[in-house]
Length: 152
Length: 379
Image 1 (tube, helix red, strand yellow):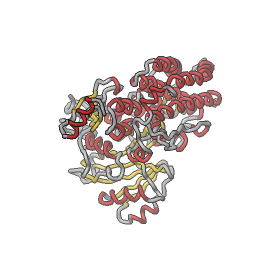
Image 2: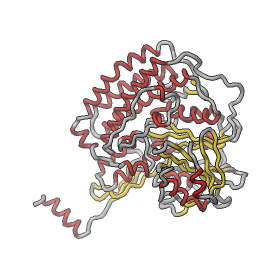
Image 3: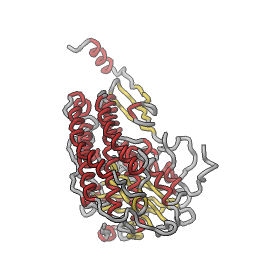
Image 4: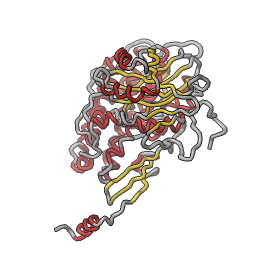
């Protein structure tokens, strides 16, 4: 299981919460700290999370904050995984892109933008990826209907 | 002195009078194995830029899953990677089991391993056959489909379906193995390695095959990790990483096998990795058949399936790479959110890196070496 003590001491103000469930460690952090913390997690020899498995976001509908960005990291060297969660502001969910740290984030972030409408700032190519380019809603949001409005 | 035609082209280039051409590849192009479309900018025969357009097969499986109960999602999952449906079932069931903190009984785990490895072989066989066909070799396809057909027969014998088994359940499997399965499958497992030798005799040292794949679709280990590439593609770049070995699940730690690793970083070594994996999978199936433990094939659960509130990420080694399920439960009978980390969606991103600056015909080989299944890419 990933030990986050060093991460916490390196970013004492940015880590909001650390949770452990069924062996998965989740670190909730402030949005401003995302880029420095990701760079640290990738480059620090005690972590070396050089592989980004997945980027996504979750729509919690009635809760505040409504949107949370989620990152799944993997370290081949230490055989460990880590989940980062970043709460986003309600009305216009925005977050900095991590493409500069892990190039694989490019399509993951496009997908998250496409399906959940989270905007990734400074992304090199933020277009829709799965839905047609003229689509005007984000179907994985909880207020998007399963049937009816919005269907072709 | 070059030929006159080439001389003229060189002069035109020098004067800066050439222009690039954009062509559309797909969504119905045979080499895309589905509905993948790329707009390719060409300078003569050299690829300048590749812009993929996805989503022709997007069905919104993640959205549907939010409105189904946990058991109802199982049949959705093998519509992802239909070439190896059992792997998707396994990944999903393991994720829900992790969420609930339960484990399938040992017998179920062995049955799962047998079925998953059978589908891995069938998936790799079809890949090798279809890729050889793309690159101009017709014969291997018939050889490989011959054995694949037998495997599909076994899958049908156990699960009742050839491609979309939906056979695994949360906490076990749907039924026990049929009585005649053990002997029939053992016969196949023993006869199979010489067949793999046959395929390799057709391709491995074949000079045309080698010249079409060696050095083609080059992707270094550094790029693989940066681009999130996993599975046989990463192992062909020397990354010794197989989730069955490194983060064992479903009793894979009880089997003796090696992760297939080569260092060529090209389409040829991706082929060799897959061939090696076919042999290893066959070996795993043999060990599993010999050691299937007695006992229950499923745990009994009463009432509606309600995992506790929480979230898990569970990844398995699917034939194409790391297949991950990220499930958030809010304690009801339906998942609050389900995200599928599809391996080919991520691996496909490397296509531009592999083919820009290379010949267009090599792009077909590079694309084939990704082993893409569009149903999984688009979800």
